[in-house]
Amino acid sequence: MGWSLTAACFVLYTLVSLLRNDRMLNAGYDLGIFEQAIRAYAHGQAPVVELKGPGFNLLGDHFHPILALVAPVYRLFPGAVTLLVVQAALMALACYPLTRWAHRAAGPVAGLVVGCGLGASWGIAAAVTKDFHEICFAVPMLAFSVTALGQRRWRAAVAWALPLLLVKEDLGLTLAAIGGYVIWQAARDRRNAPEDQPRWPFRLGLAVVVAGVAGTAVEMLVLLPAMNPHGGFDYWQQMPGGGSPSGGLGGLASAGLHLFWPPMKWLLLFMLAAPTAFYGLRSPLTLLCLPTLCWRLFAGNEHYWQPNFHYNAVLMPIVFAGLIDVLHRRPELLPGRRRRQVLAFSAAFTAIAAAVYPFHDLVLPSAWRTPAHVRAAERVLERIPDGARVASSNRLAPMLTGRTTVSLVCFGTGPDPAAPTGLPADLPGWVVSDRHDPTVKTPCPAAGTARMLDLYRAHGYREVAREDGITLLKRPSAAP
Image (cartoon, rainbow, N blue to C red):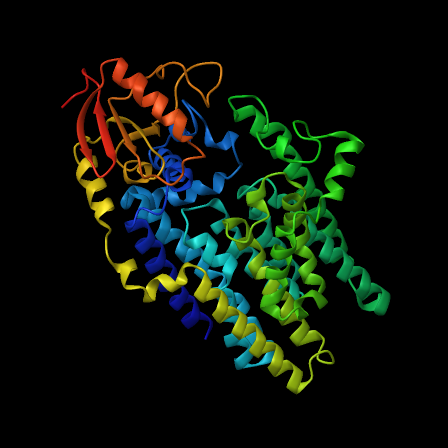
């Protein structure tokens, strides 16, 4: 059952993500950004990403050297599609350990409900159907790690969790939480049967806590600032106190008051608890969600609170591990009839979420057709030669990152990057902008894009194509 569901999820994720990519629903932020980084790794270079800014090393944005593992595959199959397929495979792999554990611990029906519930969960759906993100590596790691924790295989749990330090800087705190769980269980075991319990699990857990906290500290305070063009960690301003790692007691108190406000945060918490009919909350494994939830709820970025972004994917294996743990270790909570009701509720919630989130694309005829606007974009972009430097709008960027050097059309020079007053120092040979690009607030405000197009025209760039709102400008000295 485990491998069958994993294969089915891989096919599902691949189909849906490719269909959405074919309809130009991905963007430079973030698919184009990650393709530029992985393309650089594939050619033995530092992950410099022009979409983030001139000469921007992506390891100064988030710490994710694990992306280099995709480079050999990308070298063989260059293009954005490769990233989407790799992401689909990694996300699908998370279904295997949890399905297998649920099957063995609570029977085939539980295995099927958990496997389908995780595979079609709203958190996974939001991640695999929008761009590519580094956390696709963390999802299977956490699935294998929490499975090992639930089965009390401490060494295996730690081995699967340690690479989280290479996925993203905040995941070191989740690693530390895993170490704390091992310590707690080891302490409980020693209290219950002190003469029969070895000491090494406690020492292992302590070492993992230290490694996780120290790893996050080193990455945020040393490695990221060292590679960041601004010499700091760009996301401190979104944390309590804003702008520095220690905002003071006043900033922390203010953040605490707003920890559960606005109401969108309550919706997020409800969506996390509902797939397990709220019984997963009875398992201490669910506490492993806290490190990720805390920084997200404390942060000032509203995207972190919403249930329609990729940030929730790393929580899905933990949520379902909590349900399996309750089914296995707390049978008194779920006698026969109640167990069936919980599994039925979980299955029903999965079905409803799958209908609401983009997995429903597979049954929509429109999802299988290429829109006329996309065909127009393809015709315009065909005029840009391979290897050219291009300034592009957000949604067109991932259609170019595999064969050109792409920056954002709104980038320029001046005291305020959001309101450029001059052309970039390294002039692009081509400029392409889509008037129908829906991302008009970030990363390229509509006014900034219009200002830059006027500047390009004023400096001799001439229009060589215009179709369905897509404008292509060419630098007079650009190669034909």
